[in-house]
Length: 126
Image 1 (cartoon, rainbow, N blue to C red):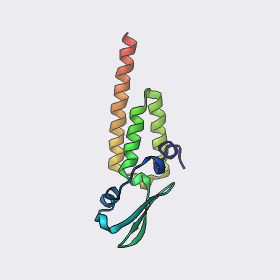
Image 2: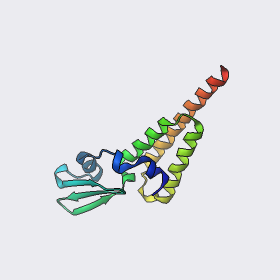
Image 3: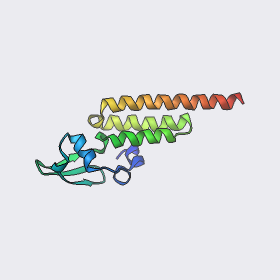
């Protein structure tokens, strides 16, 4: 697994509900029998088609977890390191990244970058 995956630890840290999965799959909740969060993937037991695998990277929780990590960065260097991990993960798992969510993350990162820049300017002006 990638450094980002190990950093986020989705199997331990994500709280994935049946309603989250139903919304993601665009199916009624009663079609879902059980959701299992495995180490590297989510397995959904469905009444209509049997089982289905879902990558953590396709879920909104993945992008929310990255956004949370971005907010935790207190320096631009930390933010750069995190963003390099995101880009590396995306290169390795390109098909699993939603482009709209990735664009949202870019904008979120730039906003935090600007906030860190302004804070560093205030410290220098002191």
